[in-house]
Length: 404
Image 1: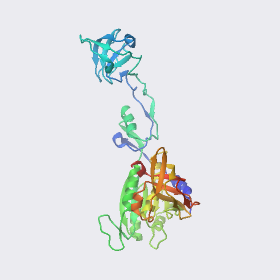
Image 2 (image 1 turned 90 degrees about the vertical axis):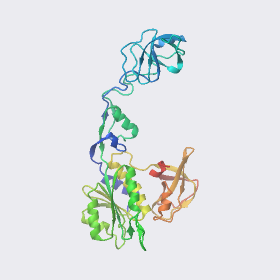
Image 3 (image 1 turned 180 degrees about the vertical axis):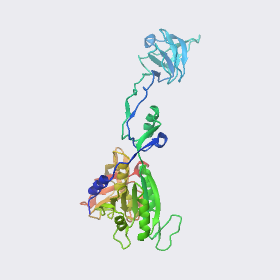
Image 4 (image 1 turned 180 degrees about the horizontal axis):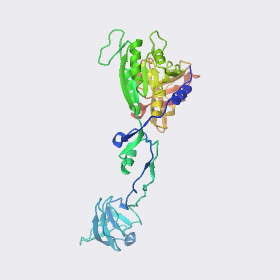
């Protein structure tokens, strides 16, 4: 049995960064760039007005009010073919190119129109260069604007569009196959008979995978028979990552490791000093990373967050792999009744600049309702059993925390 830290190290050593593919920027959200991006233009591509108002020479309105002759109007999208001379101004719209001769823009709120209509009255003086965005002040043609490893957020996609990159190289989203084992399991639409329960693990894991940005592939439920397991595991080994829930403990019908051995899977560990999730398996074929997860739903979801999510993120090219760890103040005392590192489901809040955490009462690793009420884990070290209200503890924030 190995420590959580050693299991994480072995997991990430076995995980390789995924292949590179080219994708349209409409489908790029959530991916990681696999190339440097250079601008093909200056931005702005010309000196432009950042306000609706009048382009003029700042020196002409040192003494106000100043009456200036209006020599033209410049809408956005049109390039002026005239210049502004001393004593003149041009009406200009936001985003329109500044005319030659003008060095500033006074916003329309600080102007008035004299009775003759051919002039404008500048009611306040304006500083040199005010309200004009200079050509190339944001980026220059040829400059690197985005580096390999950049996460493609909506704002970053906007940069890609600005520099004309309609298709970009990204690290491929891995396909993650999900297989659930157990003779006792029935599908969601079926009413369980005596001795049966519905398959919740498959659906929880499916959405945990989806939330990482990877591509989940549901293989369904397989019975605890060797022939059935062989066929389904073989199918799953065609994916980049295979998650198998159940069949990895010490029971008479836990055959997953036996089947993995038949497919020459290299096993990196099969027990972790952790609660929940001690009987966790990690292995690999030449192309597929495999995780054997416990059958209890809370255990499977917990192990996913600690080990599987970082592996998926590494394949996708992320630099930050793990859920965020923070220090939080305990709102209620609790005891850890194990000599293993414990991940206790909890509810964490952030208020007045600090994190506060409350462990969620649970009936154990099958208590899906309690787990659904949590958004984080309190991490209880193996050498500590008592945790008092008001003390500081380490907390892992899950995806759920950021959505509440």
